[in-house]
Image (cartoon, rainbow, N blue to C red; front, side, top):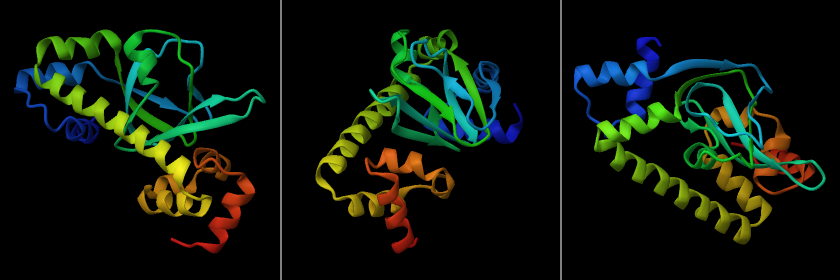
Length: 194
């Protein structure tokens, strides 16, 4: 991994202070992986083998409904973590798919190497606690939005807080994430500008 990529990774783990020796070990645990647009990174029914940190690209995590349609649960993008976290931690088959919506470059760490960080460095426990707490609170906040906001309010709220790279992915993924029909999303996009 190059120095720029490592700097991005260290910024993600900013509250973890490592000695130069520990930093080299930490760096050695990660490998670079690349995916083409629409590659499946994780498939439902299989165990997630890696925790990813996104350097470039956008991914969607989704399930398939009874009609075989994608129901988007979330996105990951540059500077964010990615993966089927529940499958990764529990080492159980994933219920979700993870797909590259744009060509993607990620850093990946295996379950064993991930666990070794927690064994060697107490600060990773603090990081892990905050990380999963933020995921939980984010999911709860999203559920409240889906249940209480109108389609227009969900669209406006999402577009105000989402990074630019999400605004250019296919509309059907954004519409699914916002729990609206693609036609509704398209109508809102044409009459509300950001």
